[in-house]
Image (cartoon, rainbow, N blue to C red; front, side, top):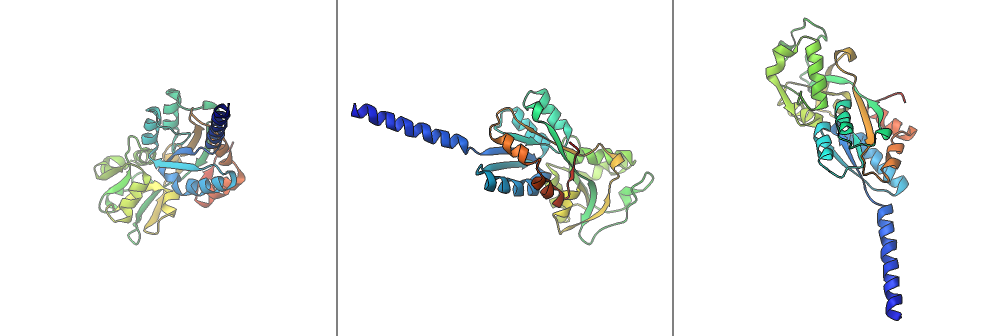
Length: 253
């Protein structure tokens, strides 16, 4: 009998610890690289208030979506465009009822600090001769910022003359870093990323009608738990103020 009581006591302890572990399980968020600063701040605020740890994986939306499709254990996905969220929806990898278009952004042309140049955002402008060197942005066929950039340059009639000087990077932060180091004479990034750098200057903003609307959809992945609490937190006034501080726009809901 004593042994039985001891075994029962131990089993009870294990079950209690297991319950505590699940209650404080980490939330894993896969998010577009351009969300790095804002979501890092919000993750800390959420953990402070809820006691639930939040871990992030920041990269290009397409790379993250393919990892999720392959079974990576993400709880929340935040994309920099609708295309990759649609991709996961088609694969049955997100909880469609939780999908929300939360944020917007602006596409900008940047140059290394002190090396800005004049540009006229209109058809007929000879963009290829406006600066020397390479043009950095995301990979134009798969990385959202690159997709938007190619759309804008095509709409303005610039693409054919500049395409062979375009350097496609794995995400928007990589493109920004190359411009910061002077390895590219210009870059096309999001305004929010440009604002985080003291080594680049914004040359011009691309008109909104030159590319698809920049939208950041968020959704829970199927294997979510406390993640719903974090997604709800991102919709609060407190979170909105942080997003606005970093230069994002808020989408009507």
